[in-house]
Amino acid sequence: MGVRYSAKYLKKFIQDEEYKNIYSQVKTAHELLESKTGPGSDFLGWTTLPRDYDKEEFARIKEAAAKIRQDSDVLLVAGIGGSYLGARAVIEACKGLMHNELDGGLKILFCGNSISPSYLQDIMDQCRGKRFSINVISKSGTTTETALAFRVLRQLLIEEMGEEEASKRIYATTDRAKGTLKELADAEGWPTFVVPDDVGGRYSVLTAVGLLPIACAGCDIDALMQGAADAMEQFSVLSPENDAYKYAAARNILYRKGKAVELTACFEPAFAMMNEWYKQLFGESEGKDQRGLMPTSCVFSTDLHSMGQFIQDGGRVLFETMVDVKKPARDLFIKSLPSNFDGLNFLAEQNMSVVNRKAMEGTILAHNDGGVPVGIIEVDSLDEYNIGNLIYFYWRTCAISGYLLGINPFDQPGVESYKKNMFALMGKPGYEDRKAELEAKLN
Image (cartoon, rainbow, N blue to C red; front, side):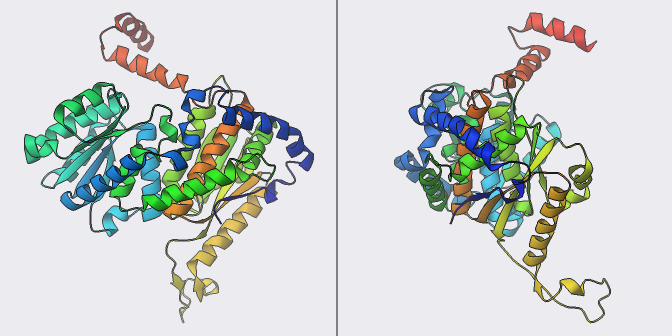
C-alpha cells in the first residue's frame, strides 16, 4: 500500500475549513514545482529521479558493490551531510542497527562526518590488518571533514595494501566533470560515480551518493527505486487527497499557530538514522530568513523516559509526527512464567510487537490529551520498497512545505558561515583579516 498520512489526531487542532483555505497555496506551490519556475528550480532533478535515473550507472553501481562485497572486509564511506546520512539511514532501517555484527560479511563504516581525531583513530583501528575499500563522496572534493578523513585513510590503505592495490580499492562519487576529487580520481584511475548537478545533497540518497553504499550493504536497490517510483506517481498529483500535500499543509497550519517545532518519533530503534536524515532534509530546506519549523526527533519508548515529560507537560511549542511501522522486521513471542516474579504475565502469550503497538497508541492518546497535535505517517514495514516510498513522500512534502513558507527549499546559505570562521581561525590563505577579527572576539 505504501506510505499514508493520517490527521485523525489533529482534528481538535485543525478545522476542515483551514485545510480548504490553504489549498490554494498548496496548488500554487505544486505549480511552481511542476513548471520549475519557483526558487531553486535548478535543483529539481529529484522530482523524476526514480523514473529517469541513469540505468547504465545503476548497473555499474551493482557491479562495484559485488566486487567490494567479494574482496573487502570493510567499506569506509567518507562523506558528510547528504553524502552519508541517506545511505546510513536506509541501511540501518532495512538491515537493523546491528547489521555489521549480525551479517557476518562486509562491514560498512561511516567516516569523514566529523573532525574528531578520536573517532577517526577508532575507524583506522577497525581497518588495520583487514581488507578494506573506500568510497569517498564529495562533489567538490574539498569539504573539510571528508577531505581530511580521506587524506588520512587513503594513506592507511597504501600502507596496509601497497599503492597498486590501494588504487583498486578507492571509489569516488563526485562531480561529473570538474572539481578536485574528480581530477584526482581521473589521474589515479579510480572508478567514479556521479553526483548530479540538479540534485542537492539532502535529496541525493537515490543517486550514486547513497546507492553504492546501500548496495554494498546487501540491500535491494531495485526495490528501493521501485518504491520511490510508485511514490512519485502517487504523490506528484495535485489533489486534496495527496497525503504528502496534506502533511505539508498540516505542518504549515500548525506553524502559523505558533507550533515552531516538529518532533518526529518512531517506536522502532532502526528508524533512528531516518530521523537524522529527516532533520537534515527539513532543517536545511526550511530554516532560513529567520523562518521555518525546527525538526527534532525521538526514538520511543526509549526517549519517553527522557523527553517524555517535556512533550507531555512542557511548553506548547511543538507538534508530533509519529511514524507508525505496521510490521516489524522481526517479532518475539512472550511466554508466560509460572512464578510471574516480575508481574508481567499480563503481557505474556502474545507477540512483543503487540505490546509495542499498545505503547505507541497509549503515547499518542496521552500526548494528544496533553495538548500536543499528533499526525501519523503509516509505513507497512522498514524494507527497501517502503523506505524508497517514504523517501519520495518526504521529498515531496518538504518541497511543497518550503514553498508554503515562502522560502527557497533548495539552497542552504547559512551553512557557509561556520566554514568561513573555521578556515580563518585555522589560517587558510586569503582569510587573514577575518582571522584577526575572530581571534579578538574569542579573547
